[in-house]
Length: 201
Image (tube, rainbow, N blue to C red; front, side, top):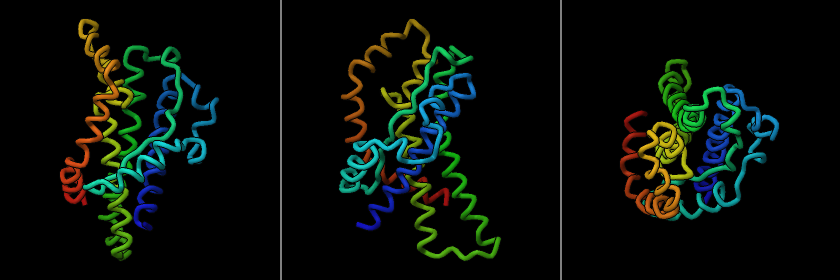
């Protein structure tokens, strides 16, 4: 039970980083909606979603595979305020997964440098760092799937020529089916994600 709560705390921290990255990317491109909404903060209370940040992770923790994922309240932004009108939404969308990847890589570097600095890596410390890497890799990969409302769909829609607009319409119309299928298949991808994390560490 303690391990599950610890993983959920890491998840909450990671999804907050993810959403704040979206907000800062939008702000850098000229839209201050997130700033005015008070969402450019690391305070988790400003971002928590009771279902996505607590309930879903608890349920997934009970499923085979042991991987958890979730989400926070989406940081608002106005795409019409972005200076890069064509690819701005894609840049904002990519900022979240990239933040998770950067956090995971930072932890990998820490594992390499701590022993060099004379700091012993206890089993508990290594397990904690490994959990941060694992959860952030999971968040990045999951959010990059091109299924609405995930970030990958926003990237796809920004890059698709207009003649393929029917793909966007199909994904938006049946997004729940695709997302449910992704969630059901996710436990089967657990071994791949765990193997990738082990390779990184």
